[in-house]
Length: 133
Image 1 (cartoon, rainbow, N blue to C red):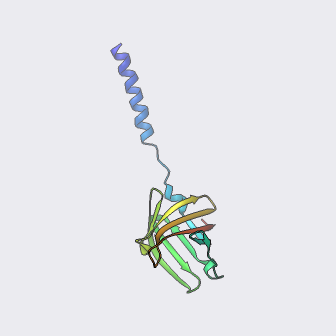
Image 2: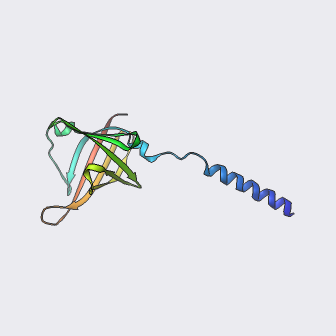
Image 3: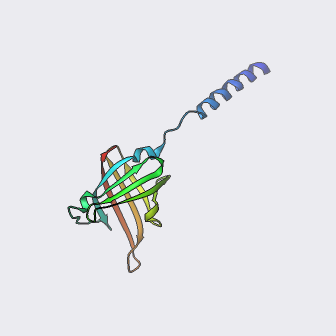
């Protein structure tokens, strides 16, 4: 009976060890591609964006590289980013962190919490649409 139990436990250990070695999907892969701003809301008030502001893009690339493009000033910033849980940090925008509210194949919603000039909490929501992989 001891040999039988040893075989069962050995088999279970092998199954557990093999399943632990399976490759896990990388959640940051969902972010890769170019995202175009669609809407900005601050404290539940939708902001009016100019035509050039509506052409601003954020591109997440492999190896934690990213680019911000601002059509209004025709500037592109090369940057880096990281994802920890549901928090995105973009190096040049620190200490501001972005909470991921939603991500799909075509849409991304990010949220930030900070303080306005008089010390009140400001909640900003950024909605993006994916325009390329």
